[in-house]
Length: 337
Image 1: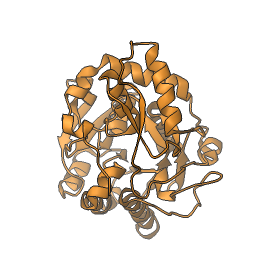
Image 2 (image 1 turned 90 degrees about the horizontal axis):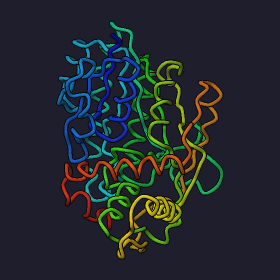
Image 3 (image 1 turned 90 degrees about the vertical axis):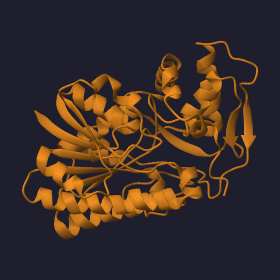
């Protein structure tokens, strides 16, 4: 049985990756410290599977080393991170601890482990490290110019991983992905927040004038790319993972309203409203993903129209998912500065 570790596997991308890995006959060890965004609902179908094991652990803990030597994984997919920009504005310390100190400890443990066992570390990062991309698309050699404490902490983690590859020769690869959407995403993020409000007859709040543009990728496409990076990617390389499809927040909201009308009867309060923008809000992110397409033969399969329908349908059929979360974490506005 091929054993792999997924850190942060109770979260959005991590749990979707676990679904895919188990379907491809990997044995998955899920390491998660259990925070507000962790959710056992996301992995409920694997609870009794012999291909799955959950271990409560923070990647800052020395226990990580023991886990590595005990299970001897052929890969570690590192998705353990604080990820919400608004929260990083209110409290940067959690992001420094998880995304920098935690990565340092993981690297130290993996450094010792990889001297004795063949394995790869796939470190999952974000397009936000590049900052505002007002024109064109950022390739892997584009300079890092993070705007938020979250993006800065992820940039630091990328540099740490890259430095350990150069200095200690650890077998690691870094990926930078665009905005993910899909099932199991915490409703602090735009799309599941809008779906929650649609289902609960609430207004749809959009920052500023709704013109902030993001490149959107369906989470299962991202997971396929991560598996491709693990099996075919070159050690020490950075790979951008994107859809090449940008939409601004207003367009996303309008498409969601249109999709939802086909499934439910919209109530009277479901309408777009504009709210005060958050501090330092980047105008546009856009990735050049030619490298992964040309080198590894990956490209996304699910367009936004297909993906957003799949996403809405999942939340509409899984209303208990929202009930498994703190309502305060869903409805409270953060990051006002």
